[in-house]
Amino acid sequence: MTTPPRVVVVGASIGGLTAAETLRQEGYAGEIVLMGDEPHLPYTRPPLSKQILLGDWEPEQAAIRTAVELDDLDITVRTGCSAIGLDVGARVLHTSEGALPFDELIVATGTEPRSHPLLPWAPTLRTMDDALHLREQLQVARRIAVIGSGILGSEIASAARKHDAETLLVGRSGSLGFGGVGTLLTPQLIRLHEDNGVELALRADIASAAPTASGGAEITLGATEHRVDLAVVMIGGTPRTGWLDSSGLTVADGIACDSDGIAAPGVSAVGDVAAWADPATGRHVRVEHQSNAIEQAVAVAIRLARGESATQPVPLFWSEIHGARIHAFGWFDPAIPLIDGMPDAPANSAIFASTDDTGRTRGVVGWNASPRDFRAARADVLGSIPALTPQP
Ligand SMILES: Cc1cc2nc3c(=O)[nH]c(=O)nc-3n(C[C@H](O)[C@H](O)[C@H](O)COP(=O)(O)OP(=O)(O)OC[C@H]3O[C@@H](n4cnc5c(N)ncnc54)[C@H](O)[C@@H]3O)c2cc1C
Image 1 (cartoon, rainbow, N blue to C red):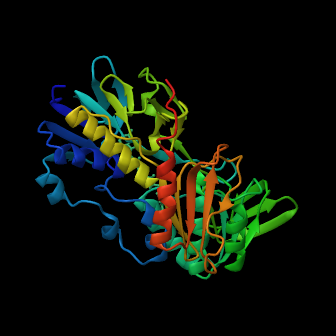
Image 2: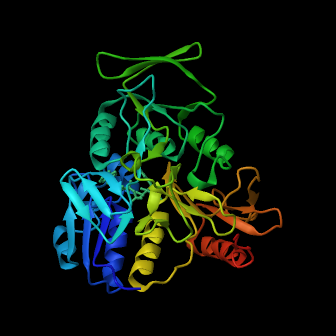
């Protein structure tokens, strides 16, 4: 394969930056343009709901590379620049600053948070600016409602408790989610929240909500009214693909790609926005974990620089909720309950495993597990991979 002269990367965050940097590390000598619509240089999002919200970090600590480092890598960075359309056949990206021809395009535009129809004014959390705004509000609010029972809802409830606020966590279903593990950890998460003083309102539909004069909200859940100083909405995200509507790319829940991340000739996608085909099942799977964005970006950069396919990344995800360190590795089937993979573990520490119907370990969760125990559990997942039969 001849080296493409210009690679354009849309989305200047962890996925986009990793793709651009890896291209250089792999010896790619052509032009690289990394563009994104945020005003900031690339930063990492996991600390937003943890160290930044708690006030332990300032924004510079979440930055990934400085302007000087990016300059040294000879990567042209355009911040505050939006992709608004794509002509796949002509290989031209349309941006808020004009047309940008490319030889290869890597799309890493992530997701955007959903807003709640009854609380359209309520804050949510995706960007550094959102996190700084929310941090200010958490410092003064005494009663907080977090709407959304996914992992970020749990992390924000944990941060609210650290700020000593009375905290209500509201979810529509009866379960609590944990990224790729789905709702399989619900009993453990419920206990963790209850032990840390979070009031849970699960299977609760918001019947009505109104803003209060002081910036809070009055929320009715069934027959109960809750008046809070702050309501935060964390009900998931949708892939940022609106700008691709007339591109002809296949977009459903994310940009459909083959198992090498190719969406169309000359167009690849990585990270939260991309749905790569799982070689074992052929299903398109979108994964919203930082390590997945990194590994997919590395795989695409290696393919473009060397013309080689890299191995499919295994999803890895971590979180910290009320001080509990929870890591998940691999794939989890929502229909198959987790089994205790380390029954004699010390108190407050556990490894849970997810097996398929033939008994192979496909995923593991480390709950305050030591790095050594979790590494051993990961090896079981890795050991099961060659046994999988790729679909045509
Ligand atoms: C608060 C929070 C906490 C998290 N915690 C964890 C964690 O503990 N562990 C973990 O594994 N993962 C965590 N995640 C998920 C992780 O951050 C994401 O998986 C990761 O950021 C995905 O990277 P990405 O590059 O694909 O997308 P993003 O990081 O979303 O970056 C996409 C970028 O593209 C830009 N963009 C979008 N559309 C356009 C356009 N049309 N033109 C130009 N630019 C555009 C966006 O503004 C953004 O800057 C967390 C996410 C959040 C929001």
